[in-house]
Length: 150
Length: 175
Image (cartoon, rainbow over all chains, first blue to last red; front, side, top):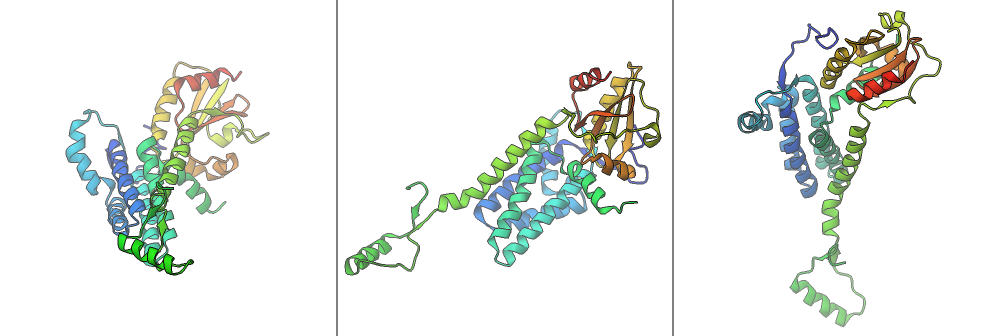
């Protein structure tokens, strides 16, 4: 392909592109439950899923394993693949929101819990419903603002 | 009122309340009489879904659309800056990053489309290694494709993967 998109120094892992979208659907349902019930344990559980996704990779989360074993066999055989890094980055963003929400709950700040959970839910919903690629939208802005101007 | 308010007083509490009211015309109870439980429970969820849906529809609708209002006035992209010669009539300058699946789809589409076009070129730029250019042009996401004429002036840009018809229309407008 093109050198821009295939940087050789980074080891590339490709996953089925439909997996993260399936995981985002489950994530959205879980987070909606946490938001409605104000239950911090539900948020903690989802936070652990985010942790696995951000560190090992989204294909190793419970949702990813469900997709691989139960959903994928029922789909079309030709799988669109994508680099694992954008979904991994998205999981890290989710983890950050979950952490803030957890800390808010710990400090007895219901508003922080609600707002953080709401943001995480918004991101998961956008991915599930519109295939919104959070990594693509945020990554360049992050690099632009954090790299010093020459 | 019935839908939004749910009285939390139990039968025993209601009997107690009636007794208090009869004994004393003004009364305050130690428990809340009514709570907007339904609204309080579902309002944050409703707000998130409505706002996220609105944003999602807007985002989806504007992906790939060629917009001509973002060009920096008077700015020209030269072959020196881009590292390659411009097309004789038009050039599509695609900014990509390594972190981006839609960039591949855009690259496939555009590089294929220019094969039969002799006066149009497709130039591919890695956003991360051209940050100054990215800042000058105010490029915020990838893929972003700039449509420029033979003098290096931007006539339009598309964020996200454009559709074939949109690309053809944009190129046809450049003369």
